[in-house]
Length: 330
Image 1 (cartoon, rainbow, N blue to C red):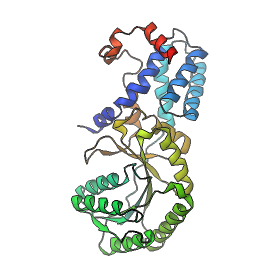
Image 2: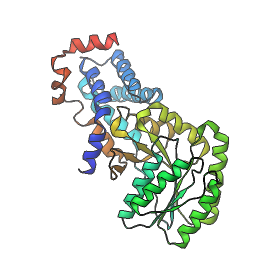
Image 3: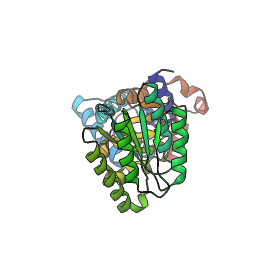
Image 4: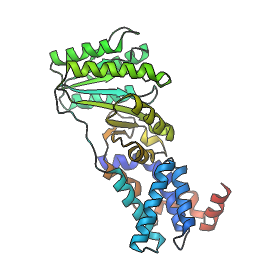
């Protein structure tokens, strides 16, 4: 399956939940008025795009419609796509320009950190790179054991200490090993104990200092792993982690299993943090570089047109009046 096809398939639930509902709102109006804007904004918010971002999109929509003198509601979806596209901006790729390139991976337990690291190891090694992983989440023995399974499977090397060891000492040894063994990439796992932000901040700051001191020429990425299925909770996590770490990018996992893919837009718009990698499946090669152009294209493809899929399932017997009544009851 091609790159765009994977994103398109991974975003199907989001497209069905968010974009098709927006399209139905637009289709129920014969003129552009304030009620249309209000219903669109409500649909965006209910689709986990966030209040701030939904409001901003609708404000931009009002402005564009007024400036261009647009009267036809059927043009609205195309305008929203244009606004979202501008909001997403240009892509930012991972910086792997140095040797070793250092990638710190942060995030709460359960977000998919270990799996993400395993998939990255597999991909980089397949690309001919030498990879070392630092098991610096020493708070959980399970985290170290899981990384061992992934590194054994991929052929990456693991630097580990005993459970409860100082995470910074693991990073110190891993940097030394990466330099001595000519590694191309050093990936550092970290603990994600957000309930104790002070300890986490001190821990991450200490690891950062060691990397800066021991590998001053290395490029450094700090990737926050978020579970897309948690919707706006993931955005809130990003806000909290942004307070304790210099995040350079987001890894959004489980995008294929959620209807809440709209959080990609709110993360970029509200936090200014680029999404750099996305998980669009469970297979080892389903961790993909994020393309905002492909994301917007896949999300809004055929929006504004009658979708043949709308006649497949329960929608085939549902009239416009039925839909409107159902929405009002909700």
